[in-house]
Amino acid sequence: MSLSAKRESLARIHGRYQRAGRPHRSRILDEFCATCGYHRKAALRLLHRPLPTAPPKRPGPQRTYDPVVVLPVLKAVWLASDQLCSKLLKAALPEWLEHHERRGAPLPEAFKKKLLQISPAQIDRLLRPSRVQHPKKGLSTTRPGTLLRHAVPTRRGPPDTTRVGSVEADTVAHCDDSTEGDYVNSLTFTELYSGWTENRAIWNKSAAAVLVQLNLISAIEVVVEAGFGQ
Image 1 (tube, rainbow, N blue to C red):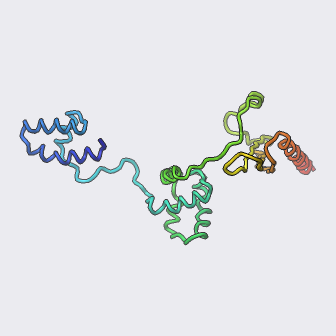
Image 2 (image 1 turned 120 degrees about the horizontal axis):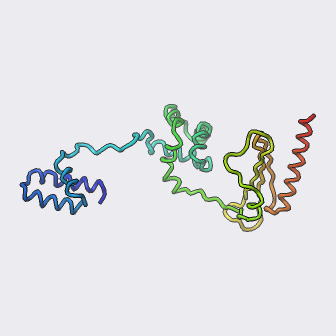
Protein backbone atom coordinates (compact mmCIF):
# COMPACT_ATOMS: atom_id res chain seq x y z
CA MET A 1 0.00 0.00 0.00
CA SER A 2 1.33 3.43 -0.88
CA LEU A 3 1.95 6.14 1.71
CA SER A 4 -0.89 8.30 0.39
CA ALA A 5 -3.32 5.36 0.65
CA LYS A 6 -2.23 4.78 4.25
CA ARG A 7 -2.88 8.45 5.04
CA GLU A 8 -6.36 8.19 3.52
CA SER A 9 -7.13 5.08 5.58
CA LEU A 10 -5.92 6.82 8.74
CA ALA A 11 -8.11 9.84 8.03
CA ARG A 12 -11.17 7.61 7.56
CA ILE A 13 -10.87 5.72 10.83
CA HIS A 14 -9.21 8.33 13.07
CA GLY A 15 -12.44 10.01 14.18
CA ARG A 16 -14.25 6.69 14.58
CA TYR A 17 -11.42 5.41 16.77
CA GLN A 18 -11.50 8.50 19.00
CA ARG A 19 -15.27 8.19 19.57
CA ALA A 20 -15.35 4.42 20.07
CA GLY A 21 -15.28 2.63 23.41
CA ARG A 22 -12.47 0.34 24.53
CA PRO A 23 -13.82 -2.95 23.00
CA HIS A 24 -14.57 -1.26 19.67
CA ARG A 25 -11.17 0.46 19.60
CA SER A 26 -9.45 -2.92 19.65
CA ARG A 27 -11.39 -4.08 16.57
CA ILE A 28 -10.68 -0.79 14.75
CA LEU A 29 -7.00 -1.14 15.60
CA ASP A 30 -6.92 -4.71 14.24
CA GLU A 31 -8.63 -3.54 11.06
CA PHE A 32 -6.15 -0.67 10.60
CA CYS A 33 -3.13 -2.96 11.13
CA ALA A 34 -4.48 -5.58 8.72
CA THR A 35 -5.24 -2.97 6.04
CA CYS A 36 -2.05 -0.91 6.21
CA GLY A 37 0.44 -3.45 7.54
CA TYR A 38 1.40 -1.40 10.61
CA HIS A 39 2.66 -2.89 13.86
CA ARG A 40 0.15 -2.36 16.67
CA LYS A 41 2.39 0.08 18.55
CA ALA A 42 3.03 2.14 15.42
CA ALA A 43 -0.69 2.16 14.62
CA LEU A 44 -1.53 3.27 18.18
CA ARG A 45 0.90 6.19 17.91
CA LEU A 46 -0.78 7.33 14.69
CA LEU A 47 -4.31 6.97 16.06
CA HIS A 48 -3.56 8.78 19.34
CA ARG A 49 -1.93 11.84 17.78
CA PRO A 50 -3.92 14.60 16.00
CA LEU A 51 -4.33 14.33 12.26
CA PRO A 52 -1.97 16.61 10.30
CA THR A 53 -3.73 19.65 8.90
CA ALA A 54 -1.39 19.92 5.88
CA PRO A 55 0.60 17.35 3.89
CA PRO A 56 4.17 16.94 5.12
CA LYS A 57 6.80 18.95 3.32
CA ARG A 58 9.16 17.20 0.99
CA PRO A 59 12.52 16.63 2.70
CA GLY A 60 15.56 18.40 1.35
CA PRO A 61 15.82 21.70 -0.53
CA GLN A 62 12.65 23.07 -2.06
CA ARG A 63 12.28 23.08 -5.84
CA THR A 64 13.66 26.27 -7.37
CA TYR A 65 12.99 25.70 -11.07
CA ASP A 66 9.49 25.00 -12.32
CA PRO A 67 9.79 22.23 -14.96
CA VAL A 68 6.77 23.57 -16.85
CA VAL A 69 8.57 26.90 -17.42
CA VAL A 70 12.24 25.88 -17.59
CA LEU A 71 12.15 22.48 -19.28
CA PRO A 72 10.99 23.56 -22.79
CA VAL A 73 13.95 25.95 -23.16
CA LEU A 74 16.46 23.66 -21.44
CA LYS A 75 15.37 20.63 -23.47
CA ALA A 76 15.55 22.57 -26.76
CA VAL A 77 19.09 23.76 -25.97
CA TRP A 78 20.12 20.27 -24.85
CA LEU A 79 18.91 18.66 -28.08
CA ALA A 80 20.42 21.39 -30.26
CA SER A 81 23.81 20.94 -28.54
CA ASP A 82 23.80 17.21 -29.40
CA GLN A 83 22.79 16.21 -25.86
CA LEU A 84 25.73 17.60 -23.91
CA CYS A 85 26.29 16.25 -20.42
CA SER A 86 25.06 18.47 -17.59
CA LYS A 87 28.47 19.96 -16.73
CA LEU A 88 29.26 20.90 -20.33
CA LEU A 89 25.72 22.15 -20.88
CA LYS A 90 26.03 24.39 -17.83
CA ALA A 91 29.20 25.96 -19.26
CA ALA A 92 27.72 26.30 -22.75
CA LEU A 93 24.35 27.76 -21.72
CA PRO A 94 25.23 31.45 -22.28
CA GLU A 95 26.11 30.91 -25.95
CA TRP A 96 23.33 28.40 -26.61
CA LEU A 97 20.69 30.69 -25.10
CA GLU A 98 21.72 33.40 -27.57
CA HIS A 99 21.40 30.87 -30.41
CA HIS A 100 18.00 29.78 -29.06
CA GLU A 101 16.78 33.39 -29.00
CA ARG A 102 17.95 34.03 -32.58
CA ARG A 103 15.96 31.04 -33.79
CA GLY A 104 12.88 31.87 -31.70
CA ALA A 105 11.44 34.58 -29.48
CA PRO A 106 13.55 36.63 -27.04
CA LEU A 107 13.57 35.38 -23.44
CA PRO A 108 12.89 37.62 -20.42
CA GLU A 109 16.07 38.84 -18.77
CA ALA A 110 14.96 37.63 -15.33
CA PHE A 111 14.32 34.16 -16.74
CA LYS A 112 17.74 34.01 -18.45
CA LYS A 113 19.52 35.22 -15.31
CA LYS A 114 17.86 32.54 -13.22
CA LEU A 115 18.47 29.81 -15.80
CA LEU A 116 22.18 30.67 -16.05
CA GLN A 117 22.49 30.03 -12.30
CA ILE A 118 21.25 26.45 -12.59
CA SER A 119 23.57 23.73 -11.34
CA PRO A 120 24.57 20.56 -13.24
CA ALA A 121 22.71 18.45 -10.66
CA GLN A 122 19.51 20.42 -11.28
CA ILE A 123 19.99 20.03 -15.03
CA ASP A 124 20.23 16.27 -14.57
CA ARG A 125 17.03 16.21 -12.50
CA LEU A 126 15.08 18.28 -15.02
CA LEU A 127 16.33 16.38 -18.07
CA ARG A 128 15.96 12.87 -16.59
CA PRO A 129 12.64 12.15 -18.41
CA SER A 130 14.02 13.65 -21.63
CA ARG A 131 17.09 11.39 -21.54
CA VAL A 132 14.78 8.37 -21.41
CA GLN A 133 12.66 9.77 -24.24
CA HIS A 134 15.69 10.68 -26.41
CA PRO A 135 18.42 8.09 -25.72
CA LYS A 136 21.76 8.90 -27.30
CA LYS A 137 23.13 5.75 -28.85
CA GLY A 138 26.37 5.80 -30.78
CA LEU A 139 27.85 3.04 -32.89
CA SER A 140 31.31 1.78 -32.02
CA THR A 141 33.65 0.43 -34.69
CA THR A 142 36.47 -0.31 -32.23
CA ARG A 143 37.09 -3.92 -31.31
CA PRO A 144 39.19 -4.80 -28.26
CA GLY A 145 42.47 -6.48 -29.08
CA THR A 146 45.08 -8.21 -26.96
CA LEU A 147 48.24 -7.26 -28.88
CA LEU A 148 48.34 -3.53 -28.10
CA ARG A 149 46.78 -4.01 -24.71
CA HIS A 150 49.74 -6.10 -23.57
CA ALA A 151 52.37 -4.11 -25.47
CA VAL A 152 51.33 -0.61 -24.33
CA PRO A 153 51.19 0.04 -20.58
CA THR A 154 47.88 1.32 -19.25
CA ARG A 155 48.00 4.91 -18.01
CA ARG A 156 46.63 5.40 -14.54
CA GLY A 157 45.39 8.77 -13.37
CA PRO A 158 45.21 12.03 -15.33
CA PRO A 159 47.46 12.63 -18.37
CA ASP A 160 50.85 14.33 -17.99
CA THR A 161 50.35 17.92 -19.16
CA THR A 162 53.50 19.35 -17.54
CA ARG A 163 55.80 18.71 -20.50
CA VAL A 164 55.72 18.38 -24.27
CA GLY A 165 55.41 14.93 -25.78
CA SER A 166 52.23 13.33 -24.47
CA VAL A 167 49.88 12.66 -27.37
CA GLU A 168 46.38 11.22 -27.52
CA ALA A 169 44.82 9.88 -30.72
CA ASP A 170 41.34 8.67 -31.58
CA THR A 171 39.19 7.83 -34.57
CA VAL A 172 35.51 8.58 -35.14
CA ALA A 173 33.45 6.68 -37.70
CA HIS A 174 31.11 8.85 -39.78
CA CYS A 175 28.80 5.99 -40.67
CA ASP A 176 25.39 7.35 -39.63
CA ASP A 177 23.18 4.51 -38.32
CA SER A 178 25.00 1.58 -39.93
CA THR A 179 28.59 0.35 -40.07
CA GLU A 180 28.05 -1.51 -43.35
CA GLY A 181 29.90 -0.45 -46.48
CA ASP A 182 32.60 2.21 -46.87
CA TYR A 183 32.65 5.48 -45.00
CA VAL A 184 35.08 8.15 -43.79
CA ASN A 185 36.80 8.04 -40.42
CA SER A 186 38.22 11.15 -38.82
CA LEU A 187 41.62 10.73 -37.18
CA THR A 188 42.52 13.25 -34.45
CA PHE A 189 45.90 13.72 -32.75
CA THR A 190 46.20 16.09 -29.78
CA GLU A 191 49.41 17.12 -28.02
CA LEU A 192 48.28 17.52 -24.42
CA TYR A 193 50.78 20.15 -23.25
CA SER A 194 50.16 22.72 -26.00
CA GLY A 195 46.75 21.61 -27.18
CA TRP A 196 48.08 21.31 -30.75
CA THR A 197 45.57 19.25 -32.74
CA GLU A 198 45.89 17.60 -36.15
CA ASN A 199 42.82 16.22 -37.91
CA ARG A 200 42.82 13.88 -40.89
CA ALA A 201 40.15 12.05 -42.87
CA ILE A 202 40.82 8.44 -43.82
CA TRP A 203 38.81 6.09 -46.04
CA ASN A 204 38.07 3.15 -43.77
CA LYS A 205 40.27 2.42 -40.80
CA SER A 206 42.95 0.18 -42.25
CA ALA A 207 46.43 0.09 -40.77
CA ALA A 208 47.94 1.29 -44.05
CA ALA A 209 45.67 4.35 -44.22
CA VAL A 210 46.36 5.27 -40.59
CA LEU A 211 50.12 4.83 -41.08
CA VAL A 212 50.13 7.20 -44.06
CA GLN A 213 48.51 9.94 -41.99
CA LEU A 214 50.83 9.24 -39.06
CA ASN A 215 53.85 9.79 -41.29
CA LEU A 216 52.38 13.04 -42.66
CA ILE A 217 51.70 14.35 -39.15
CA SER A 218 55.21 13.36 -38.04
CA ALA A 219 56.68 15.27 -41.00
CA ILE A 220 54.70 18.39 -40.04
CA GLU A 221 55.94 18.14 -36.46
CA VAL A 222 59.53 17.95 -37.62
CA VAL A 223 59.07 21.10 -39.75
CA VAL A 224 57.40 22.94 -36.86
CA GLU A 225 60.16 21.96 -34.42
CA ALA A 226 62.82 23.11 -36.90
CA GLY A 227 61.05 26.45 -37.28
CA PHE A 228 60.89 26.94 -33.52
CA GLY A 229 64.54 25.97 -33.23
CA GLN A 230 65.56 28.80 -35.56
